[in-house]
Amino acid sequence: MFDSKVINMLLEGIGDTLYMTLGSTIIGYIVGLPLGILLNVSSEKGLKPNSVLYRILDIICNIIRSIPFLILLILLIPFTKLVVGQSYGSTATIVPLVVCASAYIARVVESSLNEVDQGVIEAAKAMGASNRQIILKVLLVEARTSLVTGFTITTGLLLGYSAMSGTVGGGGLGDIAVRYGYYRWQTDIMIVTVILLIIIFQIIQYIGTKVALKLDHRKR
Amino acid sequence: MGEILTLKNVSKSFDDLVVLDNVDLSVNKGEVVVIIGPSGCGKSTLLRCINGLEDIQDGTISYEGDVGMVFQSYDLFPHKTILQNLTLAPVKVKKRNKAEVNKEALELLERVGLLSKKDNYPRQLSGGQKQRVAIVRALIMHPEVLLLDEITAALDPEMVREVLDVVLSLAKEGRTMIIVTHEMQFAKAVADRVVFIDGGSIVEEGTAKDIFENPRTDRLKRFLQTFSYEE
Image (cartoon, rainbow over all chains, first blue to last red; front, top):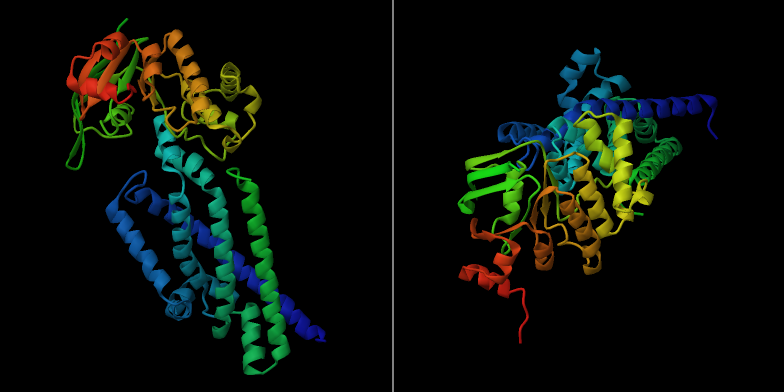
């Protein structure tokens, strides 16, 4: 159906898409997970309430999340150039993806941790556990099913956003879909890239659901 | 036998609501103190103040060693096995030797008849079994004083007995305990001293016989009447 040139391009596109999605998810978690923990801990009902810190983090997260990703992508071009030296290509796309993902992940992590039963936290306090021990041994452990579900949702979201960055030369399957499908009217290539995105999405969701189920000891 | 826990002029309020008003209480080593009183009278808050889960606005609380607590809703860690629930705090908080803690955990589980459940998760246990595990989880921290906060209130009636039997056996071996309960028969059986709290302060205290058979104040009489059914 396609010649080897197109197939190679698609394979490269898959590689770039996975690189952007997983790269931004991982770096996003390195930034967003501690932020989410801070949000939970500093909130009114948290382990160490601090309304000033909470308010600041809360506002930053809200601002980042309320800017449409495409606009964020453009707004961050100077910053992206500063960090990776260029504003196009898949590595450059990771920068705005990480910024967007960190705020999103912080919220997802915060809400996962909020779900942990207050009684269980009090039981740990009553046994003399320090806040650090409660965070590491109780909060993160007891919230793990929800954290994994959040991870899956985030990865799916970033897969979609990485494709969106194709419109501004971000590379990956989205880029191919836009260049061939939209500008050159090669509908067949566009359809194939969309199908590939669907397959990748399904695989991510399938693995995420399986892992979450495996980790859940609360019911079944 | 000396005092092991002393509360002096303890007051606690949530914003404008006074929950504890100048409470004095002292507990001797080996004594079992049962606290009774209407809902919302401050019984549970008193326990929560003793182990530091709530701040107090006034007064002092002093005690020797550690205080352990068992809650109405068990609050076992749902993602940890029964054995892990028991060993987590001694190993992580007290930095005790893991093998030694494991051994003690297994002995304690054997004692409450739950050794076979060691590798199960909390969801696989009945309420009564969970509460027995929660008692063991408090005991393994070697507390000087054990606080029990309405530990049978969430249980089905047929499971109350198995939990209270564990508490009775602890009382027999001389454990210091402060017990908040609505089980009056159990209070009679286990208490060295009964304390009646109403409206945030101690209204009356004495032996179980004094309190249940010769209540002096109207408030206590009225409270006790709510538990009897006379035609």
